[in-house]
Image 1 (cartoon, helix red, strand yellow):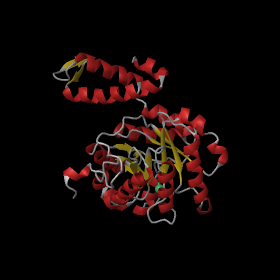
Image 2 (tube, rainbow, N blue to C red):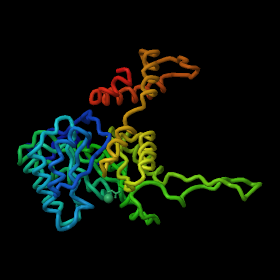
Image 3 (tube, protein in one colour):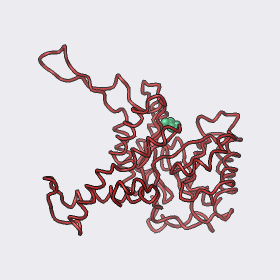
Image 4 (cartoon, protein in one colour):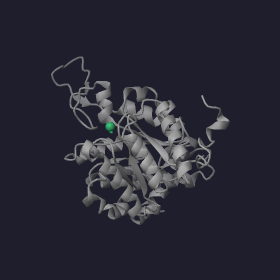
Length: 347
Ligand code: GLV
Ligand code: MG
């Protein structure tokens, strides 16, 4: 384990100082786009105004013969656009792939000052983060990158889930972690063929000792355990947790419900793989106006955050004040970007 005094030292002479506090940014949806498709690259300026994060995907879903074109397309997207408050990320190929070294070297040396976050797939343990951390520092130093590029890990192997606390605390570069339900299902040997979401067979049968003929079946959330474990690891290390992809584009209700479970459990956003999922994520990961107004009443009723008061018959104390603060802080971030929601929130 690294000495605390060394944790915040740059890993290469000339690399930028590691961040001590994460940047405050709204990241309700990480929108995936395939950078090798010119028609979609042309739509990036429009996308920048619609989403919180634009991500150029280089890994899964990009055919092997288009990997180099995707990387080149990402670099030209970086050069051709100003992203302003919208995040600009890439998902590189996994560390054991034949493409990853060129992904990292070319992107950091050519457009490193434009990229906020690199998403790293198939992270098994802290050692994967340490490798990328060191390499990024060396490349940042030699190519004049002035702000550290953050790392976002995908939690998508059984080994990664086992090591999630060490991954979350592996480096000051850690931005957050996303659940990767498709690869994780394969890694665990789950018997599903989906990208996220529930399964009709996974649930509990009502325990009724009397009449066994009319027992209800309640479907359960396949991802509850992993999301909870990931949220705790992230929150304990001051980094962000995200739900990942939802693959059934024909079922927006199921997508919304999966995103909402993640939001209520502590996630700050999810991936949007299809344009229709942008609005779903925006709706789910922006706090509800009624909740925000109630949270504002709690903060007003307890200006110093201590004591106990009754609001509409419900007891409020220091702990509900802290919950209210989480909701109001997020609402302020949303309001700064969305004037319509600002009015609804009364901010
Ligand atoms: C995402 O990468 C997943 O495997 O679900
Ligand atoms: Mg995956």
